[in-house]
Image 1 (cartoon, rainbow over the protein chains, first blue to last red):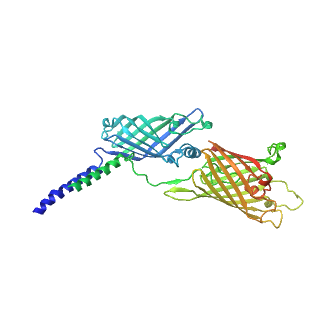
Image 2 (cartoon, chains in turn yellow, purple):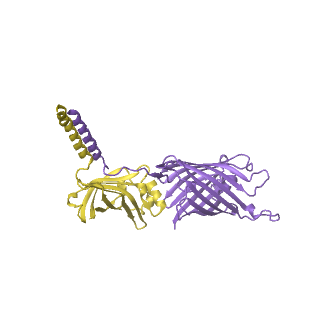
Image 3 (cartoon, chains in turn brown, orange):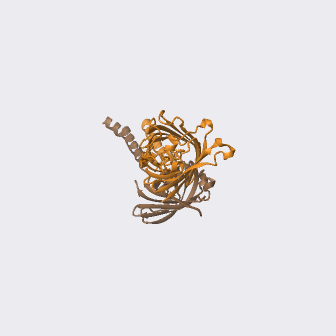
Length: 194
Length: 287
């Protein structure tokens, strides 16, 4: 009787506390995580001389529907160009992808609370955060569209960057072929992860 | 009571510290194969082939010039009064199989070759220390026979070259290539000379900027195979890449723009000042 009391007393308390702790620690905090490893990011450079575009179909991205945290990671080598030589020069000369293998974005969906992820519909939101390209981080803020369709959340956005802001040098000889305003398009279908 | 509480706190802090990391929502990176690219700026080191191939359905149009000897001095404008040249191109049947043709002023030679990249250097999920390419080349001299009165066979006009190109990009800046080479001449000028000539090429590329490189190329011919006055070929080059073009500027003692002439027909010696200025211009076209 005395032993039982001790078991349910001190040890019982310990087991309960541990269980609660584990539960809180290793389940996500309230909201669901939505993610995909096959998002799309493309970019487009337009000048009167030449249009250059490339697309990456292997973008990893996820967001937390409760906190609004949103993240992207993309391998530079996975950008596909129409011309093989452009792809080589992009990796070798402009992005130095052996040194800077990936680009990332880490930010927040500002009005995540106004998006009903359980209800089909189209919502606009501002996504704000740090975009890191070639080791240089810059604050980026962009209007995005989230479309909920039977549990799948499509996120889309378009914004413009200047490559020179990220230390990407454009040599004089190709100066009229590479735009200083590069349009970046993001398009990802997120699925509920847990 | 204290110990369990500490344990709980520890677990909390571990879980929160993971959440605090920058990309905690994303899956960990699975290992991928990183194929090494741009070991050389273009598909020639200087005179000889590099392991680079042009991509599928791309045509690399190439014009190569080698001028006269710098030792010709001001009278010959340091060799610019004379030139030998080759006009030709490389075409990508696939990313790894290339064919090429050319016509050179040296012995009025037509040449054709096939190049097959069968190993590609890579890191990551698949480790491959080097890139390997096989190159087979045939050339036909179309000079008029010097002795039309004797019986001349068409086969006497033909030579073959087989090369194994092995290269490794050690760092972003440094690439090294070894090229064991066999030149076969159907006709040689004396009985004592060998029809099969074995040599070893070495190519080194050092990047200066992202768009310029310094190149070194040397072909060592194993002794007692050639005429006594033949010399090994040493070339020093400088590559400039400007998007679709690669300009290769170089100094060399070879006059020929194809392997047989480079490796087996060079009389000039650097030490005598018999060095030529030359250039290759490569322009890529897409189809």
